[in-house]
Image 1 (tube, rainbow, N blue to C red):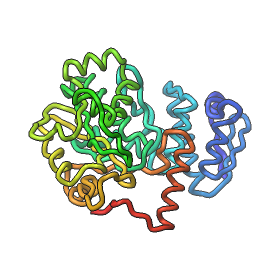
Image 2 (spheres, one colour):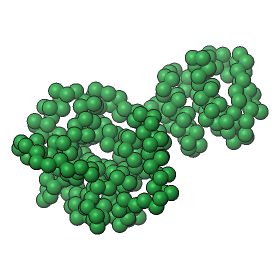
Image 3 (tube, rainbow, N blue to C red):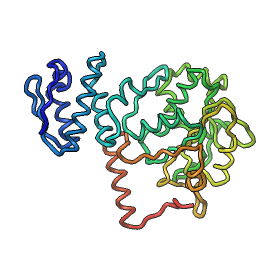
Image 4 (spheres, rainbow, N blue to C red):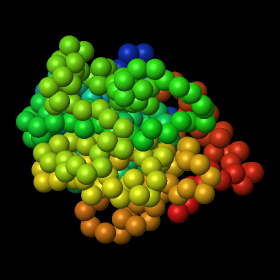
Length: 322
């Protein structure tokens, strides 16, 4: 049991509406917290109490410096600290955030935070994990941020044109209209993060280019932020081709879910092979996500876990080995 004395106004800021912050801390760290005026009494395991004591000290210091915590910001930060005890509130405030002009994007999990930090620190970053974990969304946000900061001159978004278990048949229109259905998720992210009229102008100028992976062959992509999405559906040859397009002043982010490979039988996923080939060399950075990072509907996390459990119990394999 530990008793902590804090200024009354800091205790009020900490408690939150209907004691919601205290209840969150109790659930995350398996402790009981009793607030009595300026006194907080914490009862629980020694390690959890020590972590909570450190959080409260950081909280008090930040509030004294004028930091204002929104409910979502505080809850996101302490949830990530509960997952990784090496983190502290000081790591989150001032916040790691990315402004795209239209929106400010803040990581919602420790893996998302490490992903953004990796993109800042490395020129080639691989993001591997299930759908809905923010891999593509955060990469597009970083691309727009770097464009706004004039750190790059263009954004190139690409993905392989592989059908996800469906036959789309003949598609009318010119080449761009034929491939647009495959590239729709990239458009969705762009229009969510930036003003639609601005996106159209940037695309008309060629500052933002969205194209199938096959269009990358023979090019050198310099001073660009390049995102290869759905990389689990690249072949070995396509992945090697893409990685050798990267020119001076460029960053590349490669995203994919190796449990959702839609290549024909017998074809090795370029993403799976790249992990085996490149993971031990300096330079490229690999970031991994799991169902705990899912930011879609709450049921998506449960669905992903159910499929993983089913696959492990039935020995299912979706050609995920090189």
